[in-house]
Image (cartoon, rainbow, N blue to C red; front, side, top):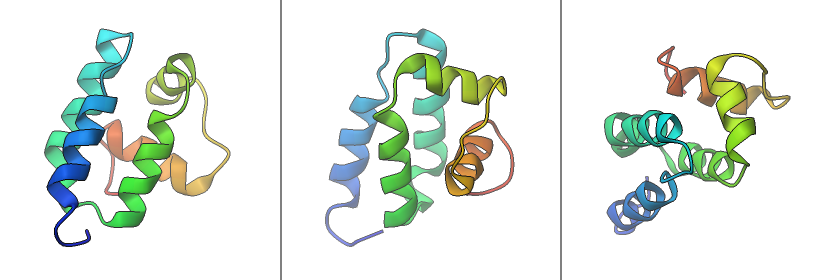
Length: 86
């Protein structure tokens, strides 16, 4: 993670984890709290890209009903779901 802006970036991402669905709030915020400080800039950017998607898409991915086409996004989704590291 780049020095200096990391904490501010995590605060901004934490705010963006607030969704219209409580389940998503819990999953996304929990992941960010646990893993956010260890993510590098590329992983944080991928997480931010995930947050730009509509709630039903994210929810479907996190429940395993669908899979992202992008393999790196699929790794992140698995990580959020509690699998291996991103």
